Length: 332
Image 1 (tube, rainbow, N blue to C red):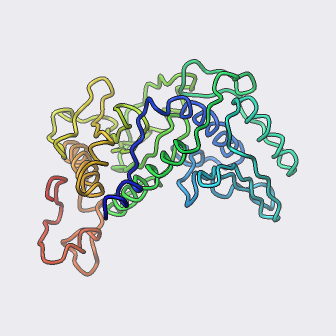
Image 2: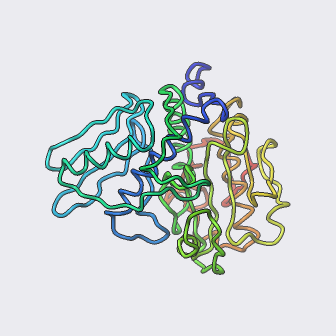
């Protein structure tokens, strides 16, 4: 990858620089996410509610509605919100500087015009303060370049997360964008149940978190916070003993006691010679911390090539370099 290609794939985006657009966009994606929540059937751990990284932005994917389906997509290339129906009808709304109240009104009006009435809880979650959407005249910024660069960050993180996900044959979540905290995430499960979660997220019922964390997990993700340009994170629930003192890779990764998770600044990935490799080091070594300390069943949960049983399938392409059956994250 050339320097220009790397800059496009892993763009620089200072968290403070795009704060106003980010806060507005956060409310917009919550509105669209709640529309999916209102119409999609319940799936364990709330997997029916997130958005997904698409070739143009963020999408709900197809949402069932009677005998038909519809999809809502944020297009960060043409900067429109597109509502597409299986009947062939569409509505397109411009993404532009406007209040959350205006956006909310336009989206609900567009759905009504498509004969898709949807009722949602009209206030945001996991934020403070939680201004009802119809009353939010505070958040109104939209910088198209900032939104586009954030999406490019998600495109690259999504690609690496999918590679990491492919190494696991146990229960594993999709790579999905949770609009509550505005983060891209992927979660692995050991197969064992977990202690009841205490909840505590702002403006979110505790039972929502109980369902989300009903089973033991190792979860990783990316969110636009935690450091100058955003952060990759990894945590375990429940966190095993000595999780916080496990040695992880790369050297720029660290444990954040206040958050209870490992962090890797986005800038450290962006400026490295091999961003994908740097991020995979972090994902693999922090998973090792959770799985090894909690005694996960590696043989049953981790993917291996049927042609090369001792080599994980995603690492079998490293021709000429022998690798152990369960390599650690620092074996690059």
